[in-house]
Image (cartoon, rainbow, N blue to C red; front, side, top):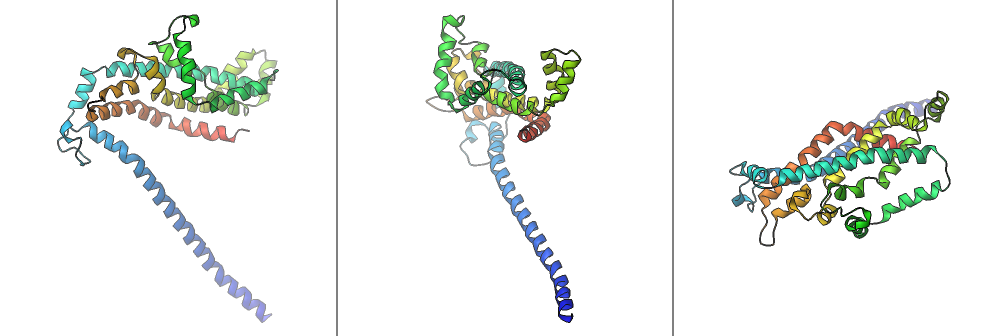
Length: 298
């Protein structure tokens, strides 16, 4: 009995010590995680801050190693906005991004709803074909896209038109997959109740499925807008006139074979980031909620 009581007494003294060591290890792990994440954050933010800082430097300071400008100037912004076609490039990017985003929001959502809630012949094969298109590199699709854009059979040339720039991103396989995953979580009971009440099939989609899927639709729209705003290769190929170029394509004209106006390039890049920051700051809740909820859908 004495041995048993002594063992119990020893274990009672040891438990707080073990708990304290476990808590200390957990605290150490958290500190290491925070330190690592802070290092990663600084690594990502420094180039962004350098870009903004360079946009305020005169041309004579571009090659200097100083992080902040010695003589800050706003002349770069004045030159880029007033003496170049950057406002037109800005408008072109905005039009193309909005066109594709509106199209993706409707057609990808509708397609995802159909794949999730209806059974029809060849459904699985068609969906696999959609997903298979994700494995084709964009560079390999540029040739057929350009043939479609310049072929009179398609209704005339689409070169140097908003439709020609936007049509490759009007419907995306990624968006269809994303919305299908989310739509599978929409209760079938609600749709059946709507059918009993006489709601049309499109009404079920528009009045029941869409309101329940707004987080995923919001995330899809934001990702699509960001992708089309930053698109470079296809707009570079399908535009020949400077007034129809998008912002990323137009900015590259600040660099020539002889020299690069890095002050103007950084100024244009800084201005191009402004809409993206506004969108992410305002709608970041939809990005996080949409991705998180979509990942939970079976």
